[in-house]
Amino acid sequence: MCKGMDNKKQRGILVIAEQSNGEIHKVSYELLNKGRELAEQRNMPLDCLLLGGDGIPAEELNYRGAQTVYYMKDSIFSTLEEYTYKKNIVAFIEEKEPEIVLIGATNFGRSLAPRIAAALCTGLTADCTDLQINDEGRLIQIRPAFSDHLFAHIKTVKNPQMATVRYKEFAEAKRDLKNLENIIFVKPYFKQTSKSTVDEMIALDDFDITEAEVIVAGGRGIRRKEDLAMLEELAKVLGGKVGVSRALVDAGMAESSAQVGYSGNRVKPKVYIACGISGAPQHLAGMKDSQVIIAVNSDPSAPIFQIADYGYVGDLYEVIPQFTRQLRKEDAVK
Ligand SMILES: Cc1cc2nc3c(=O)[nH]c(=O)nc-3n(C[C@H](O)[C@H](O)[C@H](O)COP(=O)(O)OP(=O)(O)OC[C@H]3O[C@@H](n4cnc5c(N)ncnc54)[C@H](O)[C@@H]3O)c2cc1C
Image 1 (cartoon, protein in one colour):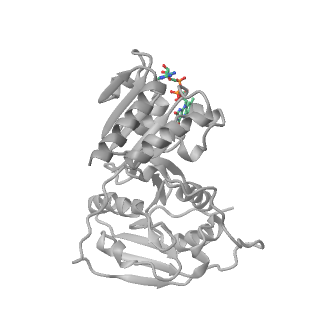
Image 2 (cartoon, protein in one colour):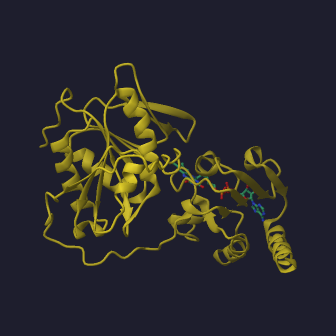
């Protein structure tokens, strides 16, 4: 049984930075931006914990607003393995006792955060879209509920108050080279955390749709898996990636890593082309903040047209190949 923490003692906001192959994930800079705002309201320090192997530019986190960067440097952290990370982060939090802990709602963060919260006997709000401080100085964790129909405001009774925050929800903290470089190296508390060891991590795929600037997304209007090639071609011409609605994942036509929506990925590309997607609230939850939305649907009353900047009522099997051909022709003229 875990003891939990004494609420009166803690101070400070701790951002758990994420890195992969030595590169700091941009969600860490977004958390520092929001963390700075909260820290100023509470008049408390904003620090960062980074776990990783050699050669990570930890000072970047100072430039983005972390007062102190605690760098737990060891090759054991080169592999993103939740159990080792959890044991060490929990030990660090128990020692430093931050009042608030923020983690990115990335795949790894979503898997890691609940383990940490459970070990610390505290609550966790996942996938927050906003954070505020209330009159009592407590963290209000805001996240969409009931398919984005309302925003739940959640308060954790115990400390640390923990939240994961969706990627691309906040702007990145601006890089200020005048910020002091203040890095404290911390030894891992636990090196051998389990009887089993991870020899090699094999990624299912390295597909990351959240980084795409153009997304051509297919829904149930696509009849067969092979027909997704049509969308691939358009995406290729536009330098984008193919996304899908959950209908295609459920039908076994696409991987869940390509799913856009409430239970999939949240995306904010420059251009989102929805092909044969009706526009269910759960799908819109993942893409409605795209800069420009283009919808192709044979049903003029499809809800997707209500949020589309440009709409085409017609058969995607005609319009998409035509559109691709036209773009190729224009490319050839250039
Ligand atoms: C808890 C929960 C979580 C969910 N999470 C997600 C999620 O993350 N992402 C998600 O997408 N869904 C999610 N869903 C499912 C969601 O409610 C919808 O069922 C799903 O989005 C529908 O997918 P669709 O638009 O592709 O299919 P449909 O709603 O069946 O729409 C297909 C559209 O294609 C059009 N069409 C058909 N043929 C053509 C053609 N030849 N040319 C042009 N248009 C054509 C039709 O007019 C129709 O509008 C979730 C549901 C629940 C309950």
